[in-house]
Length: 190
Image (cartoon, rainbow, N blue to C red; front, top):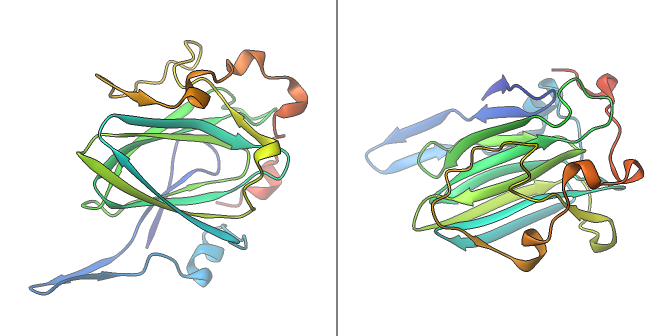
């Protein structure tokens, strides 16, 4: 596996080694030892799967407290995946990183705790899977408005389907400081 740094501290683009032949392909999607060597030393406690049709935009979500780190991938279709650094004190606070991940390119994205996440489905449909480092907690879930002008995210949006929860998200500048995670550079080892 190749672990590649991105423009946001701690967010990693992971490219698995894929072994293909006339029958299909094989790849490891997770191996604890390799992830630990890359600095991702977390216990995953929950796996999630979502199906979304073309034009669906989900996010931008995060939990605080009990922030979730997420290891995300797409097993069918394609999405434009977005992370936003919302960690107080981070040198990239308010910056975003976006990348296409798909069943075809087989990329994974590691999103550390304290980073908001969302995605937009660019294919006819997408099946999105992710491992989480903490349990879902509705009481600590927050939603940042996906089209917050201050973030200037370049979504590949022509038409979009957004839930009521995501449509009513909060501008990052309006989120009380006590509802934002703190940047901890000591936890970033890669």
